[in-house]
Image (cartoon, rainbow, N blue to C red; front, side, top):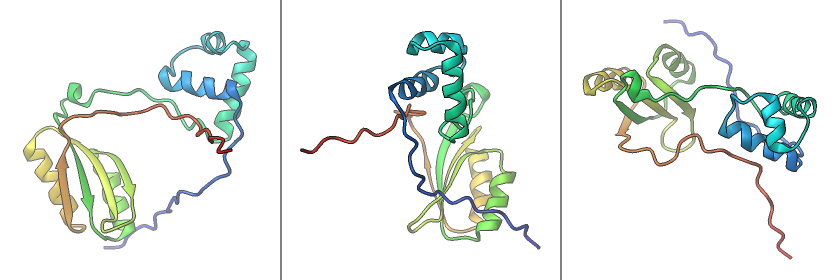
Length: 166
């Protein structure tokens, strides 16, 4: 079976963009509520709407803001079980293709260590979990953990502030 070559996106350390206090406040506000208008955002960070619009545009162009999305309750959509599945060493292209075909894969990370992949999946029930994990087992050894409770999800992240060690 021929495989399509899949482009690998490698996480690269970028020089961090220099952000001032307004940019940090804009990021904090948008991560808390991305649906607000630019006028409301401007009011919250004490900038005019055109000034805040320009700053948001620059943050988007610099790749700091990569998108806007709705957070959904998977249980409300019928996905009663979420699980983490680790997959051992396997062919990158074949695994990438399988991940693309499996709608149950919520998040997928190519990782270092004993395993090559960490996947977050959402399924309806145990039979559905077994079906998805069975497909992943064809790629390599797997280890599955059902998520019992989420303590933190979608945490707002701001630039790290270096402490003065003098």
